[in-house]
Amino acid sequence: MNVIDEIKKYQRENTGLVHASNILAKNSSRMTTEQKKGFERITEKYYEYLKSNLDLKGNSYDDVKVRSAKLNSYYNFFHDNGYDNLFSSQGKFRSTILEEFMYLLFKDLVDEINKKHPSKKLYCGSSKAYANLFFTARNLNDFIESPTIGINQKDQDFAIYRNLSVTVENKTFEVKMPIVAIECKTYIDKTMLEGSIATAEKIKSGNPYALFFIVTENYDVSLDVDPAYSRIDQVFVLRKCTRKSMDANWKNVSADVLWPLVAQVKDYFKREWSDVSNRLISKGMIISHFVNNESV
Image (cartoon, rainbow, N blue to C red; front, side, top):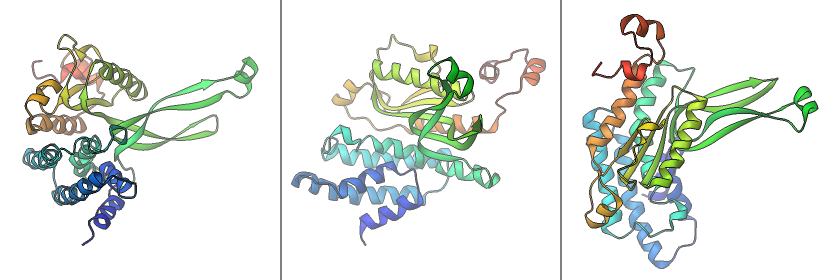
């Protein structure tokens, strides 16, 4: 069996396999002797990891626990063999592990929804997510006669989205409208958090009903900074630690952090997003985020 050929087959069948794409790109690139030796071992381990994840079907709590164990096994293989920095960070080799894992985590949920809506499909994976329309013109005459229409899009590490056609002034644009947008980080510091806050604003200006999450391995933001003021819905810290404590003591990804991520998305897909009339009569509170709080 040729492992590279098997990975290629899986990639053709699953468009969200960004780590697989990275591995295949590395396979055809120039490497040092040390990199080649490590890459061969990584490829074998990755094939086992990927196959077992694709063979597993479901998104229950038990399924998430099994997937998190598989993720830890793959991460620990990198850590224990010193492969975290085998390739440059610019190539996003290690960081694509988490981006791809989001696809493996949510793929079955999206497939379940698509069975109910065969003619209008959801997609998941990395994408250029729609942010907003904008209009420009060189001068007043241009503004009156033929203003330029454009689309602002934001690269998202992972999104659950549907394709839409938007027509304005007889011009049609194809956009990817996210309902869940996730930024994936190896770690997040204050500067990265500020960038994510800006991205959340852009995504939610295009679709105010979209969920926006950060999923990070560890957390490097000062604990005096509270992201609650932003439009980020949640920050999930998979290893429940800072980068400094990670350097001192390697921690596994926690299934107890991954499960609330999946559970929040599943719950969001089941409930009403906009029902002002019902909330007015039943609760006297209009904004759904607070009406659905268990303390109310």
